[in-house]
Image (cartoon, rainbow, N blue to C red):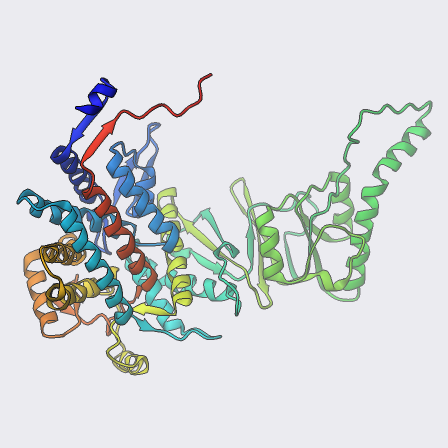
Length: 562
């Protein structure tokens, strides 16, 4: 009532109404996203105001594209999007985990428990689960030559939640090879050095890795070659076009000779730069069948293009800046801002440069480079929906591999030495089918719940035990949702899984037939950083929402008056 005195127009939700609004918003967002989880999750169709359609099951894309108006749901969505920005995956898991924490809390709050007691229990459970995660993870020594098989299994686990099995397995190799291509010892991995280019062409299974670069434009002169082998690459940022003076000036001439002399003087500077490039080409290519390619960030005018074409040089103008950086890493050489100090040492090398025309679009491929540190994933698909889905999956796969290399750990129980695990996999020739699913088949969540109920809860004094129990039950939302999305009986599967864990068997859920599977033998590796971030952010947001006892719509307009 005190607020009513200060502002009669304020809208206020008091205590239980505010709490239930927050709980219902979290449950509502959970219900929207939970059907997308795992490899058997369904797809959402988003229809824009202009009738444009987007098909996706990627949680990050859904939360960014959906128009969410409830302030609580917006807060949860931002947390989940931040999860994707930090670790590259786990968006849907974050939303359903927060929703389940709120749902479990509602049971106790309706029985009269104060939210503060639950929040204290959440904090204890969060710390215990993070400590359990440290012991549950399996260290992986990366060194100079990372184990490709482990990286492939991590990438496969992530990508199969977004795409169908055959395409996911093909993209797994592409993603792992691209990250290892750009990786440099003792340096952070920069995923921007992997160019993701798409072409609406052929089928999704034609997606491939180009160890080099694909530029989305071609040469601008009809006489230039469309295909060249054994090419020297000159990467430069030099203006090869006539530029008008910056000040207004008038030139007067009395006859045609004076005009010709003036035009020649205007072009002399540009022609001199072109001549230096041609001289370098003659120096390195004379007497051989090598070719010469100029890729320039700035413009090249028609007279300069004509001079270069006559000299047998392929020239591309107005290349994007990000591609200039990648070119140097892919082909070698140096990026030049001047032609005054041209030497053969500043040139890169590519075994093949060719132009591909698709409708009105031109693409230039730079391939067969030596020791590349940049590459291109060329995504192909028959329509925009397929291309967008593959792009989302590739981005998540790249982040998953990067996280594994940086964490030097994966989420699997450290029960056997890694070498023994690989011997088992190789000897048995395990084929990873749809059993290999995201979220580690729910094995970590089930093991963490058992740890909280059997070990942690006994050490907690007072009613905070109920907060620990609510947190433990909320962890089961991942295996429950995976079972539900696969058409299995949720109760039967959870009873079977918890029974196995009570006998100290670390198992996950088999989405193909129901029952249990060994995530180690099926090669289901989860990202350590994704799980850690999920366990850190989820309980914090849930705790803040539970402690809200009043929602006040009376904020002052923060814009400055005109």
